[in-house]
Image (tube, rainbow, N blue to C red; front, side, top):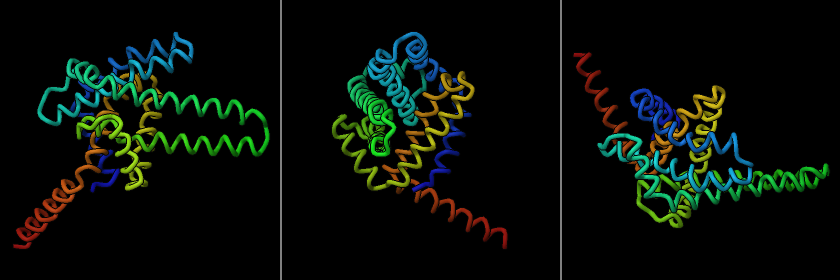
Length: 234
């Protein structure tokens, strides 16, 4: 299985090659995200994100997956994927919104008390929410790459999390860090985040689901290097 830094480097190379279609995917998703953040109350935003933005994000994942199978990466394919994956994307988005509400209400109720016990409960709940969120890192890609139902994909994602905890936490952390760096420019976040996440999550999850491919590639590279070294000696 490839290391995370190799996955990140491969993601950067792919984004460089496909920068225009990936930007179009990101801007299409942001066409919903920007008005929701700027003009709607927080409660309506929480409802709108799982209803509309998550299916569009699923569509970006779907479009890039089809690109890896030789099809064209386009907004049209993204919208087709959003329509096809509306139900699983909405279900995962609803779960994420619920986790967000739990986290906010915990800090509002316990964190505002000023007591050590209250803060301890809030910190524990934050850890619980973070682990629950990280455990779903594989879900949408399992729906796409393995054609699983959403319930089975959620369960399998949790299993993969426990099977590869360090890798999963590291992959999630890398995605968050790249998102934060893009958010510094604001425009870069809205233009690139959706497309970047589609490429990165596909490569990170594919790496876990198909570890033998990485091993075969490494063995082939080592064999090629040995042959080349032998020729050099000759």
